[in-house]
Image 1 (spheres, helix red, strand yellow):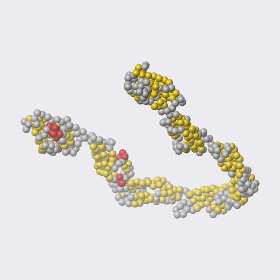
Image 2 (cartoon, helix red, strand yellow):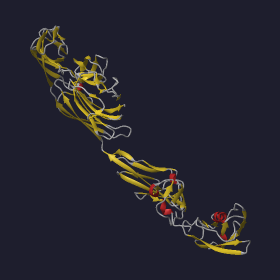
Image 3 (tube, helix red, strand yellow):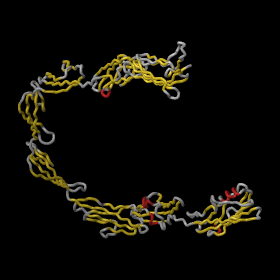
Image 4 (cartoon, one colour):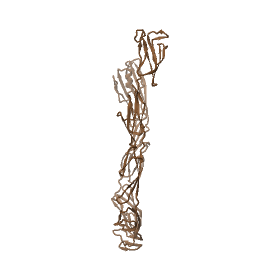
Length: 584
């Protein structure tokens, strides 16, 4: 089935089979029914070991020496082609005739190809001309029979454009389908250029003026004019404010319109208010003003400007009052605007102003008391700090008097506090035994930021395997130093010697199985088992010795398993499991 209406299709698919009792000599393929008529043809290549005659016509014949698999492969390459535009819809019937054993036998199969009418259409466009009215128009207006869901190129969302000359051009509407490709319609749009004209004379004028509104520019091709006043001339005179429009018809019945605003205004009024300070003379618009009141003057316009009315309101203003209170030490003075103050008292001073009224400053001067200043200092225990030439080391409160060159002393109250210093310690076992390793940790670890061990390590923990004196120095997060040391004892060796064989033959050499230790063991406990798991010996005491017998009977030679427990004088317990060879 040709769902997209391309008019093309192979006559066989992967399921085609060619078989028989005799070899195949040739295959003839013929179009029997075709709505496309003479526009329908068959196209096929030469097979791998044969030749094809009639490719591109309604009937072809292929001969060759091939097996059935090769004939199947060739049939899958035979294609039906409808060259009409568009391809005719409908069912094509094609006969496939196979010749076996040099034509003695034949067999016929049928292939059917149905060409469907494609359901995708971009519609029909055309050529169009429009006047430049600036209105929005949808390009779909110029299409007929178009499917939805396509897009325009150049891209205009929803196909909306303005009827302006710059939008003249070719527009393509494209509808796409994932399986059947796409369809494109073309719209040629020409928007006539607008007239190069304008209305002059609009604006704001003084009341009572007569205004000329005139159409200027390239008015060639104009067929009619109409003003909002009813005039058809290219210029009108107006004396009233308002919005005026002009309608012009030109070229191919295109319409151009424009509006202009004319407004009239009264003379300009400028109002202001000024404060008049005591004893001040105000120079305003050529007038000398010395008292409060209402004043006005008119300034005639020039160069077409309207007259301006200036109105002034003068109000009486007073001095600006300000207060200043200041304390001084004996012998100290300060200056304001050239006046020096060195004694207590109340004073008034007039400060001239560059803008506005002068300022009347009321000044109160008093003697200053001693200045008191407080500080809190923190040091590490054992440290000292110098304050005003005195070394302080004990926590507490101290008072100092700092003399001033001008006579006002400063009372300095110092609170000296000691930083909290945690008690340092080394956490870990008190002894280390030969052959083992123990862990020593600096404490409190979370309050130490720099740690220096006596063995040169700088980590918070160290591992040691020998006894001796170990120590560390550290800095806390308050930058105080701490120190701790710890003596680690050496414990006795826990080495145990267990013979792996003995020969109880009374020759005086290795006649007994005896256990030896490098340290003092206070108690031994042993059980010995034969190869079947039966216990043959058990002993508990300050020493161990076995002569290889069980209940006074001599045991045969062989391997025996022992379980041994040793208890040392310091209470430590050592367990061993192993084998011993009894040699006879």
